Length: 404
Image (tube, rainbow, N blue to C red; front, top):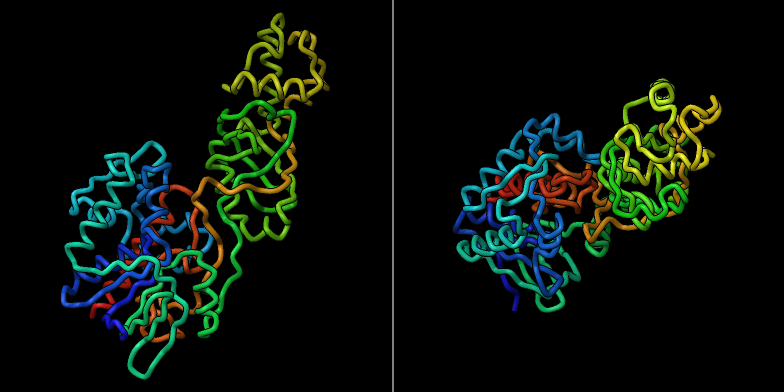
């Protein structure tokens, strides 16, 4: 016995739920189901943003918003003009979930809990009579003359239209590849750098704003840098890992970075300041008091790395020592030896080739009546709510066109 639906959405995550709810609200007569391979739904929503769910980002101009997507920047311009961050805020507010903006622009539910978003989706699904079927891992997709046929581990379904919102699920990519789609090989996108170096040893948890460059590359980024027991993380490093996802994979995650702990100051600026400090604080010990608003322990380590002994006073600093300290402050070289995943929020660069998707409708150009939303496409963003915004926008556009 084949279960028959108008629309089947494969993937019970953020994009899948958002698409299903919008489809049902636009056309309540449609029979809709969500198929999820796992035993529970919305898992990534639950853990995202440290359990608070970073719903979107307070960037309301589509042409600015797209600049946060290393892959998808050009393609998302049109979609963001149809449904942007402001529309996301309004959508959730209408459902009784107000959002708030944090200092860095990230937006969270006022409740500070991802459960609020899950409850909102679950209530809407129930109200719209959408079937959510868990433990249904899709084994086969097959096009008949009139329908799509979907075989799962438990059942066979027929439907007129399919929406794929399975994120970075290699099995679904493989199925689509067999049906004629081109896949861009996935590589990790948001990751932290493994670095063993005496300058950052025992500084775990310390955070400061810095700019970072990858040597022998055009890659550079600035922002808060967090020292972890692995090495380096924080928004600046994650941004670099996203923009450099392909290039750093080719380097097999073995490369050197140059860190400017003074962020926007150049070596020359630093040297001028160091000379002034020497004039003004001649009697003080160099290692004892931190300057440039740097954390004290980091300052001590950088002074030590410059070959300056603990008992040296500013007045006794030689030109060579001032230069060495200026170099450590603005151009310290660190060797990266591998990466580690950023939290559980695993994001990949890769997926369905964007040339094979119509971004006015999110429909496949290769398979009729097959639509995509979210990270199944070769679209990914830096951290800050942007990956979710891509999911909401895609889901909204699919619903606009699939329900006609």
